[in-house]
Length: 207
Image 1 (tube, rainbow, N blue to C red):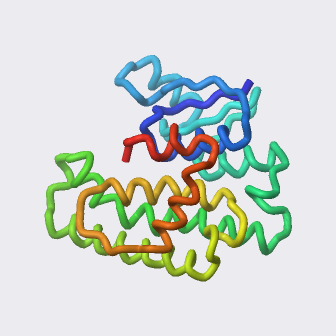
Image 2 (cartoon, rainbow, N blue to C red; image 1 turned 90 degrees about the horizontal axis):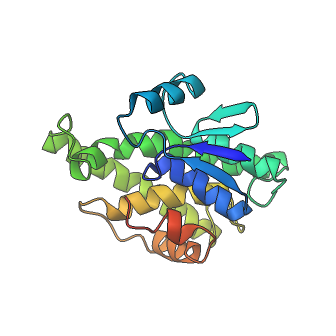
């Protein structure tokens, strides 16, 4: 059986949980990283030298990095709807997944840590405002992409790009701060609501 390690409040763990729900796969979930338990930390570090979650174990195969795990699970299940096999279609999905993991995540980090986590290392109001403004600009990029496709992030069909960006959008919606009205993002987010696992792992009150 598949084993997933990682606290269920982690946005990156929730990506994988949503993919697992979409695929209807059975798995065992270990909420590693949810406590300060030294033994749990040591176990996590044995699986991932970065001691970060999520980590997926498929028998003796160990994989970390959330977007890589999502791609692996879709490919393992031969779900070309989630991760196309045609090079250009697949590249388009992966382009938006990589954008989420790099550009978008870098933009929101300060605003989120300051406004939601209230982390003591993130108390600069000007830096938080700049982070929020950058985050809003990038969400505008997503809005324009959705205006072009009229459906989902990478085109007409739901894909892994919608999963990873759906989580990021939920975080944007729940983080305090001034935000523009993005009608295409709002309509797309509403289209995601009936998906398997969405209510449990995305729109569940956790930013």
